[in-house]
Image 1 (cartoon, rainbow over the protein chains, first blue to last red):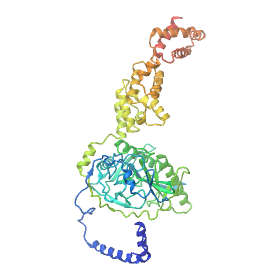
Image 2: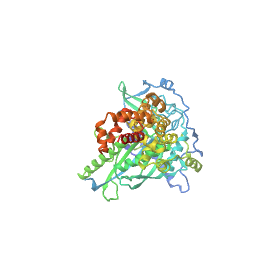
Image 3: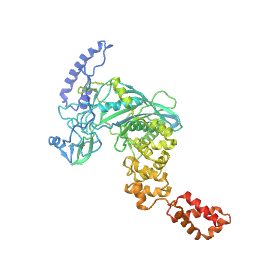
Image 4: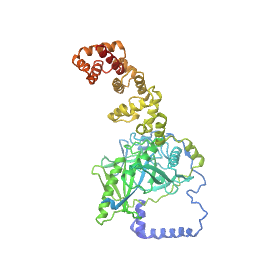
Length: 93
Length: 482
């Protein structure tokens, strides 16, 4: 994994990676990918893709409103609120 | 210029599903509300919460899949679509990537030339909506309202098989109708219940290979979809004609300028790093569930239209108008069922006076100040001869204004039809006495003048005279005097 790929991944994940760390991270990630790549040699013809390690299926909820408005409680722990909105640093679309 | 180029269009529609609660939480799913009053701990992504799928959402997707003859997965998986934006508190949207619930469907659309075209639907999957950001809310900060966060959406992806703006709109209207008649979508375009992303590319006429496509995001009306596609086809054709190339990009349609422009490049936006959501187990959709949904499917627009023609004897045009929405159709059936004057009388009044009044007030049938039984009561008074067409219209206007019943208005305003022979004969005698000139003309063979006498009688009775009686008595009086 080259330096550009590490920087791109870090940006997508919003992780701050120092200049000095990029190279080492690239080496580590490459090693992990190499390890995972060995799995490609296994024969998977009869194997269903696994989406979850538990052999169970999703429980369903009835379509009912069960949650009341608890905005005041939730907003007590928010850094900034006004008029019911959560306030965040300005986002430019 | 555009004949040299064939447009290839695909639509991604986001249908907001009409549930009581959200997709993965028990908070209310209804549109609107004071900011953040419909956002529970799951929706705002407090630590430690877990999503649980709303079974109603699943059934809605299955119903849609059945209607478009699609393959319904027996096992479906939810995935995380990762990106960062303040109206997405988890840092990912729960969506589907591999194994969507609905795959490989077909939809027939009616074309302008009277033909029918089958359009492929690649997939329909479930995903949660994001919240809303309100810019410039306070102190140069951005306000976030998470009421919409977690409300259920079904994303419906067509194959790139639409060839014009008109076809795209016909396809979108068909999906809208299915959503409304299945009762899975409220169909409210202004509130974003059906939003559309359009992919447009051009290829040289007859060519196999597709051209580079541009995507136009977030169109929320049929008209904007049509105009945006028309504009985009023109733009790309001009670009290709002049030897340029179309850039693969996302564009926004500006209705004020009637033009599309590139969106500010969302950096690496396509790189969503999907993976199965470990918080959600795979969903099982057993054949028994599909059968259960199939058995409960309501009548769709076309079936209803055909039934109205067959069972009520309506014209195709009336049936089309009266099945414009499930609410309209239910209103008609209610009214026709309660009305002694028969379904055609109900249809005439609904497509006539009632539609005009609704249009004038700018409201839909759901907000109609009259209910179907009230209109039926008015129609009964026409059928039994109490009202003439003319006075019925006056009664209708008064009922619309006050919400009163027909009999109440008729009694209050003295609008009942005059059929009493004695009363009418007196009016006629007076009219004839005051119309010597016309009487002479009539007697000299100018029979056209008869209409004048009818008009005078109607004027004298404020339109309440029974027209058949007036005709009979007038003829009698004029002949008698001969």
